[in-house]
Image (cartoon, rainbow, N blue to C red; front, top):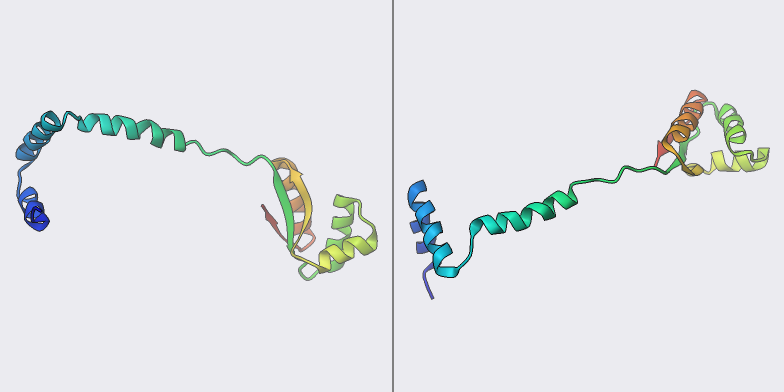
Length: 123
């Protein structure tokens, strides 16, 4: 087997022109093209690039904060829960307040709860 370290040292000492000539010789010898490998990798990388924008959010009450009564009132208004259920939700934080809502509604709910003194996360 060839001494790999010697090959690495020899390749490291090549000039750019010599490296280009070596690439051409190897392409001819092996019947491959370095450009083809780049072309094959290009579309795969481009296909992975588009990131799907999230359209549904869950509004999570992270903490009630200092004004728990105000937060309970807002949770009741947002969810339609009774007093006991809203109180249990607020006291059991972190808990989801509303699930599968669009970005605008999620932001509106978050603003309402934060105005009341709660800490809110969108997931």
